[in-house]
Image (cartoon, rainbow, N blue to C red; front, side):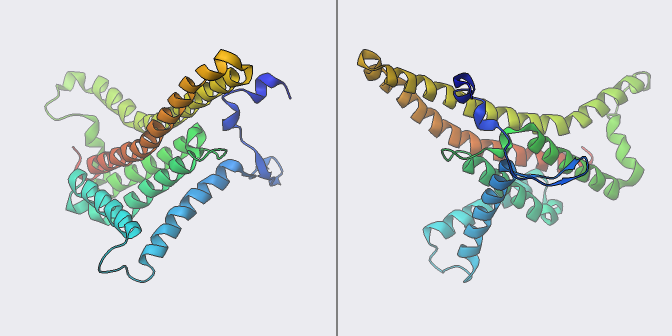
Length: 253
């Protein structure tokens, strides 16, 4: 394998077939992406199970406090963005937030894999939720749901143009959700890989460059801390946008 490929910052995003499964021309192989999605979901589920298995303590432990804080945070998010009518969707919103948070944070572990840095994962998730939210809108309002395509008070002469623009804008939500998460996770991990490779190269040369390699190493540690914050922030942004879109479908704003 060429050295340029080994040192490539994009090598960390390579999909590896761990368990090849094929039915004719249909490939359903179990990959490293699926493995780390399962690991992230399992770790989060295990944390909640261990905290709630005995019903929790009157005086919460550190882990119980973290779980309660996350649940209260998502509950307040649902109440603020959707209102009381959105509480029925609280389990979905909480599961979505924890799933993304777990997948993003597992990807921060060295030599692991960030599944949310692949567009196919993030877009599949956003498209599925977009279709579900659209179905909720039709369930709530029937064909009246199409009224969101024409804003109130808009001149009828502009109706054909506005309908097309609103429809494109509405459908683009599925794309923007997936692309935003994918781009942020991929860009951050790529930057950390490039700077860490640069620092390792300086260290391998020895001499003055070895001493100067402390600078990129410090930058890598700072960027890693920043990436952890971005991982949490992107899970929050994705979740709050889903809440906003769900609110629009329920209340036709």
